[in-house]
Structures are given as C-alpha cells and as structure tokens.
Length: 193
Image 1 (cartoon, rainbow, N blue to C red):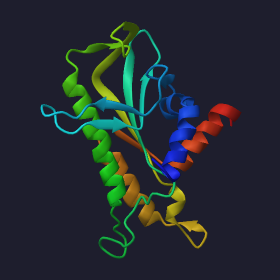
Image 2: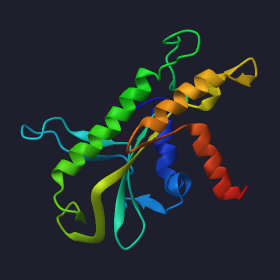
Image 3: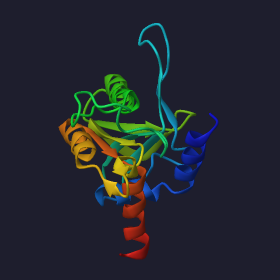
C-alpha cells in the first residue's frame, strides 16, 4: 500500500488509542500484539474472496467486543461533485458508499466463520490466548474525508451538510466519522478541552 492511505494506516498503527477512547469512550486496543490491519477471512474455494480490515480491535474488559475499521484518507470526497437534484439534493460519493459496503462485508464474512456468541483468540501456533471476543455484532467504523469539504466562500453549505448527515445517520451498524471529527475527539482526550 502506498500513498496517503498508507500514511494514515501507519499513524493509526502508532496511535490505536484514538479509536477506542475517541469513538465511544470505551477503552479499545489492538486485537493482540500484532498490527491493526489484519486479514479477517482467507480466500479459498469454499468461502470465496478473502477480506482484510484496516483495523481489527477489541474493547477492553473481561469479555471484549470486536471493532472493525475501514480507513480511507482525509482527501476522500464525502459527496458527489454535482448535485443529484439541483439545487439542494446531494448524494454521497461512491467512495463513501463503497467503503461502507466494504466494512459491512468484512464484518459479515468474519461472523460467518465464527460460531457461538463468544470466540477465544488463538496465537499463530495454535496456543490459546486469554482473550475472548463477543462476535454477536461487531462495531463497524469508517474514517473518511473532512467536513471542510462543505465550505464555500468561508461558510458551511447547509444543504451539503444536511445531505451527508442524513445519509450517515441512516446507516445501521456503521459509524461514519470524518478525519476532522476524529482529530477533535483526540484533542479532547489529550488536552481535556
């Protein structure tokens, strides 16, 4: 992976705390001592194409819950370039729709492979860990774009903002958060402002 998405992937590898405390005020951490980016299902003739998640994390607690995150870039457009129905109806970009579908498919395929409500994690050599994950309904997060995209002549365009907000509030099971929102949450945590 090269380019801006790789830069963000590296940043989040070094700062995974941003996702847990910043997204839901529940402490989250990487799944184990490995990287955030993980293959959740492998490609084979029985299950089809494999899936890779940009961040596989878990909540901290006696039983952890799973969090899958898709990370795009701050430059990824949130809305299509032209209104869908001028002058005030905007549709979200194909990048947003595609990324939502991507994280949903990753969660679906991961859940298909795990039976039962709890799943114990195992090391690569087969040794069990002390980590149990609730797989009933993993949290799904998409980090993408910035709200400054809606600014025109120094002010926010309320029609663009409303179109985006209506879309992201209508999605079940996927939290869509922009890079500027994630930044402000991180500042609140670090600086208590």
